[in-house]
Image (tube, rainbow, N blue to C red):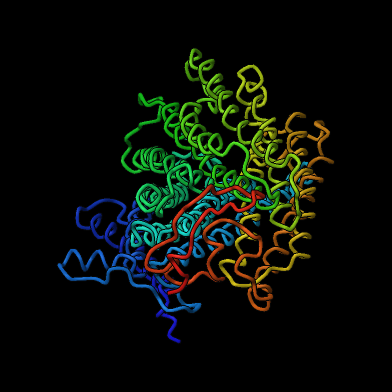
Length: 615
């Protein structure tokens, strides 16, 4: 096989060539206009990063059909590729392939980001500098944060891309070519973020606050900003696709309140992605222009306002938290009825609570800024709006408890991760109000208490639900069954280790440990806590390694999966495993009942008789 036949290889080579071309253009222009020095690294890297990304996208062929349209040439309506491992390294228009591409890339990014975390956590075992210089420590902290966020965004894309069309009876996403573009633009973005390691790093944390990020000695800030910008572009285009797909492509009889609850979560998530992501792109772009052209948007000595950056940044970055957790909460609500064998309690309230969280999430951003020096009269309104988020979130908790009440629960690996997610997300929720209340946040802000709270929110709202989803739908996308023993070992290692990690982070935070700090005073008396947090981190890493081994072994030699191993009512489980290329036959199923009437005799959700499965 010719390795250049793989789009991924062509794209990476194209990015290298494009980066050199962009650098050459800058150097040539400076030479022509007599600028001194001729070589200036920062503008060269910026244009190189932009041109390199363009070359990556062109070399993969993901824009090929659009270029043909521009030239007036005809293109196939919607080609589907032949099965084979190569399709996962090439541009595909099949939403299932794109979903798996998102998912595998997400796991790889998680492993890289987790490695950075283990490195700097090892540095924190004892006071004093062990082996990391402080600049390198800060870069690893920032890379861990931003790559974890990128990994979560890709994981959200994986779940939504794979599941939503199957759940609503669509053959694909509304815009398959845009769907492929949304995935592939992430890859050069991730490369640019990682390139910061070789360009001086960045010491501002993942938030990129100026004036730290305006430090002209660190070119790494520019590749960091560009990488996040391109990953954000993926979010916007993906959000558009999901909104149109859900609103225009549902099967016959599937009214909004007969959709699977995960589709509601996906719709709420897409509305945030489409509406808010531009703001982080704008905030980072303004810092880029300040660095390149001296525009001084955020330099107070030149009339700029650094608080403006924080308003722009957090207007996206707090709603982004709900981009991470809404799909996870949707997974919990989707799986609970299956393993409890009861109807989902308060279905309509759960559906509306997802939209409620998305809406209220736009009015809480400034609770990140209580200590920033913003106008004091803004504190109290944002405190109340922050606490208001507990209402739609509480609706979900009450629904989950009501669903489990007197149910006939079984506990395979997906259900264990669902229950673990509920308990951990509860910890994240209960530790949140002190951060949203002005009087307590003034003391807790930027301590390790915040780190513990945020990790509990992310693990409970996304990481544990993600593992539940992978185990639950693994038979559907692979046609194989995973090892239940390894799955449960993964869970029982990860759950207690995470509690030790998160509660330990809160403890050392209350004891005076600041976040993003590479050293601490022995007088704080937190060495034991730091040691336990680090050990817990390694145990979590071991559990993830067991998960990866389980997936690889099961894909290669797992038992053949039945079409519906969980006896689910969801439409995708009425299809063979793995799912046929074209999902459903000429027309999809018809919805004739309620989606979660588990345990009710004679109840039917979808009528598949008009749509026999097959190509």
